[in-house]
Amino acid sequence: MLQDFADKIMQFALENGAQYCDVRAEKTTSNGFLLENGQVEHLTFKAENGLGVRVLADGAWGFCSVSDPESIDELKERVLDAVKSALYYTQSKKHKVRLVDVKAHVDTVHRKAIKTPTIDGMINMALDCDKIMRTRKRIHKSSILMHHDAFDKYFVNSDGSKITQIYEDTIINMSATANESGLSETVNTTEGGRGGLETIEGENSVFERATAISEKADKLVDARPAKEDKATVVMNPDFVALLSHEILGHPSEADRVLGREMAWAGGAWWAGKLGTKIGSSELDVLDDPTICSSLGWYKYDDEGTLASKKSLIEEGVLVGHMQSRETASLFDTEPNSAMRATGHSFMPLIRMACTCIGPGNWDPEEMIKDVKSGYLVCDMKVPSIDMMRYNWSISCQYAQKIENGERTELLRDVIVMGNAPEFFNSIDARGKDFTVRPITNCGKGDPMQIMRMGNGGPHIRGTATVKSVGI
Image (cartoon, rainbow, N blue to C red; front, side, top):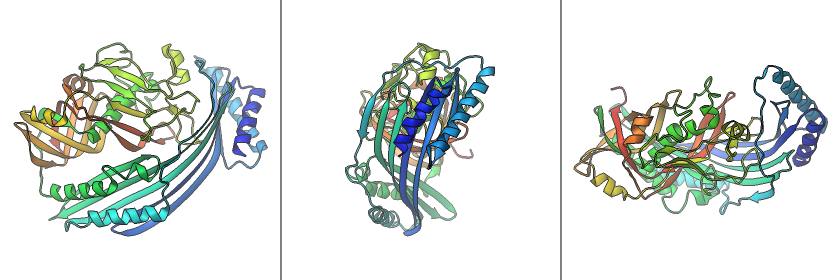
């Protein structure tokens, strides 16, 4: 019924003042739970159905959404309001919206999970992980949040596209907290991806990750904080994932480059610098929604544009941004499948899919052996970035001192700081390894949209300031 409504309401919009219209009819279900210290705290089940309708009338956007629509008449009333809103707004609009033409697609994409989880199966897996984490006496709290989500999305627009995409996500968040003599240290991990249990089993499975975070939390209780030091840092792929997200992905979104996010989430310090060298030749950056295991995978974005790998930085030169059909017209370029919405009730925004630093030629261990004095920085924690994505600080879950090419002392509560151009120019080595990590809570827009995606890269080496929290 939703698909039939979408087709009819798209035509209705064109007959009532819209020059362009697209409709997203979406059905989502989510099953999950929270487990703390071996006890299921709560179970969740959520199902949402609805349509989001975007109209372009006389060069201005209008939008409406309806959840669980019961009749086409209900939708017609909302769409008429959206068209009227666009026509009213266009009276004061200095620049009319123009969309770059893209090929229309008629396609059905069903990305089936290999092992679709059940709620009982997920709970049993979580209980096993909990037992692993709490085998160490100083672990006084374990927490596991796990859920499986299914998506059925239909897109139709007035250019002739009719696209169905069906897929699933499986995600688990685990944390272990150790405590002794009033000092607590927590280590966490997020695992999973677009698919079923196969995304968290096999190599580096959730059981191995449960062991790793429990061991690290226990050891961190005995670690000391770092002294402030501007030094060589080797960052592992998990830390690089958040770094790529914050200071490479977000400023590559064309709406930020144009200053359209300034009132809410900021802009981009490299606006107007396309074709300019902004980092060392060791810096290659891409955004790729075609990486199958990533939470940022899709075949078509929410404008119906076919997904494609985007090159953003090549050998330190800024070469591209993430574009919508609208921003592409302003940059005189092609749209590159960057428009997504959290759900049917939101307008699509330009969002990264899977922004990563590309791999290099170094063996990660050789990168460390080549450091006389520095730090190995491991695993993402909390970012703090300025409005222009220029100055940044990101805390890590732990670090190790490197002395004469050897890992030595374990350090806790560590923050890594720098400014983007100085850090980019300091990068002198990238590992051959390449890892994509799940990001589940990226916020953008007003009203806020929380989006899932992937980010990652290899081990990288550069120069930054290392210090401890509160010092």
